[in-house]
Amino acid sequence: MKIFAKDRDGKEIEIEGRDGWTIMEMLREAGLPITAECGGACACATCHVYIDPEWVEKLTPASDMEVDMLDMALAVEPNSRLSCQLTCSEELDGIKVTLAPE
Image (tube, rainbow, N blue to C red; front, top):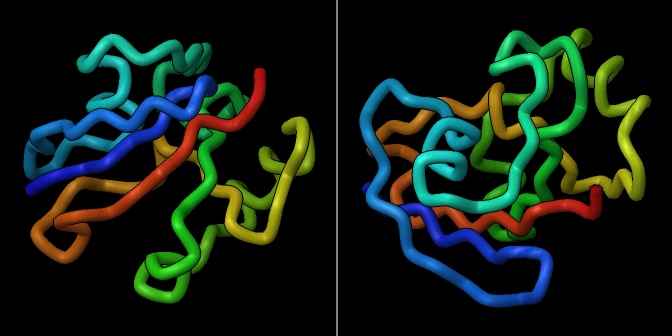
């Protein structure tokens, strides 16, 4: 599966996703500057990304815990998600995300 990620400068890179890994793990593995302080435990908002509008409806809705963590993030938009809560699978092949501001 492929993930298309834009960094904070607008440069898009293609990442080969690994089934069962989170998008946060794949972004970190690709060397993108995503902090992910809690390591994927949904206990911070430092893996905040924007989901491309064409993908928002295809995702499982954010859990209450994720929504609570997003309340602590900067520049939250309707398409904001925590990348640690999005697991790579064939259903997400081609997903496009953009790193949110730090």
